[in-house]
Length: 157
Image (cartoon, rainbow, N blue to C red; front, top):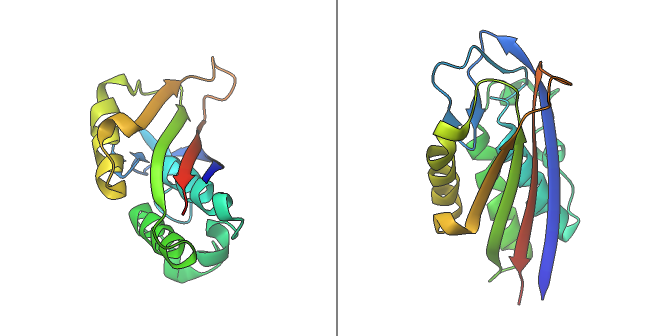
């Protein structure tokens, strides 16, 4: 059986924060995501997409922003936790494909595609060709935010 999951995350951009996408820091970015954790919208959307395949909540359940323990948390830890939850709930599952869209007006992300893809594929244990990442701008409609939408295919026994 194939399950489909979808996740979405968005954060306001502020000065003085690193811009982290897919576990990769975008060097030279003038602003990063204002968030309780590191604000990695791609990993947050991916984690929620995976959780949605089984209907077992969202990352806010395990990592509530009201809990000071998670202040500036590296979002790779969130994804690791979610992957462990999936293995507990559905032993033998296989993540088949990840498709993500990041919306950001600046900086341009094209030069960072391979690094983001490599970082994400490495954490998921997938070949890079199974991790598709596309970039869009808001066409000036939301220049002060970063957003990601992710869809996953999960094969379960």
